[in-house]
Length: 103
Image (cartoon, rainbow, N blue to C red):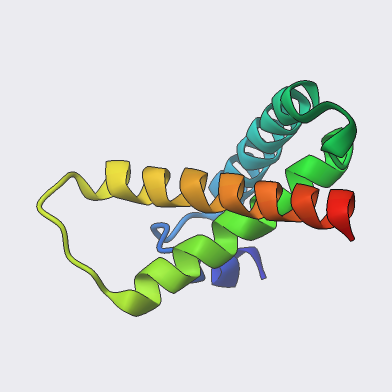
């Protein structure tokens, strides 16, 4: 399952140990960003773990949609991928926060 998810996100083929380390690093980064978002959003936030899960889901869906669109840019592919993932994660977090606050 981890390899399938990595393939869908456009990551290179990794061994099982490398995939587990990458997954752990993704989760730690998501928790750190979730904590930061919890500080910035205050009462509109979903909690550290909720923010992290929303951002991970948003980043995965954003990268999947970006790959489906197939837009080629003249910039570094890794920088574009990271930017798309970050933008999708932040957009999903803001949408979830707005839904929680106003609905």
